[in-house]
Amino acid sequence: MSHPNIQRLSDYAPRTLGTAIALTGALLMSFDPIFIRFSGVGGFDTAFLIGLFTAISMPLFIQLTDKRGLVGTLHASGWPVLVSGLLMLGSASCLVLSIKTTSVANTFVILSTAPALSAVFSRIFLGEVTRRATWIAIVSVMLGIAIVVSGSVGSGAVSGDLLAFAAVTCLSLNQTLLRKYKEVSRMASVGMGGLFLAVVMAFLATPSSYDLSTWLIMGAMGLFTAPFGRVLSQVATRHITAPEVGMILMMEAVFAPVLAFGFFDEVPPLASFLGGGIILITILTYVAATTRQAA
Image (cartoon, rainbow, N blue to C red; front, top):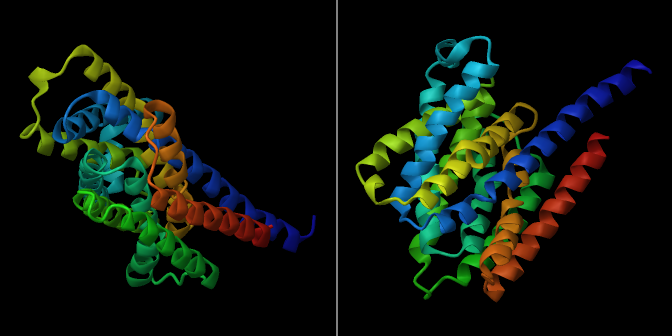
């Protein structure tokens, strides 16, 4: 194989791997609202349990899988892991409270603004220039989001939409941070976020009121799907840019409402269908086009 062909293959493989990792992370995180709705407790209690179980699972996996051990991993990650944990505290707490106050469809479609915010933050903090194709896709996504949010106006769900926007701002800043500091352990980042979340929400939660089913449901989420979905989304930033990771994660806007319909028979309003359709077509076209260019 000639050198140019080898170079093209080496460029193509990371993009394919990054896309696959981000897509898997999006699927895992799409189960968040299902567990949250089944938990049967309020937003602060849900956030506390997510943080608690995440703070348990991530250190254990680091100790078992990283030869540096937990202390060595944290030391090697340095101060960015603390900032990342604080940003995860903001995104996770706002996400949980948003899901409690607006529809699943609206929450996850608003989270789809991640690529636009990531592109802005990447330009400001990293000097990365976002390609024209990405900006065209972002504009299309913003149109879809505007349609979806219009369905919440006057329905009492605007506060939930604002919480979702606060969550996506923290998420985009975190993706940009980890894009810059690739040496930061993604498990340590997620674990630190879980620890901060558990500590803050402990002052607002009432653990004595939880029944066994709540502990089991939130244990399944906090130990597995929630933390590993976030770890995968952060690992993807090592292979593709933060705006591209955000673009792939938009598939949550499709996965989550489908799961909500399957579990709860929750039918999104017409505006969510229209806006979500625009976003789905945009992301599929974008991924297909960029993958073809890389190939």
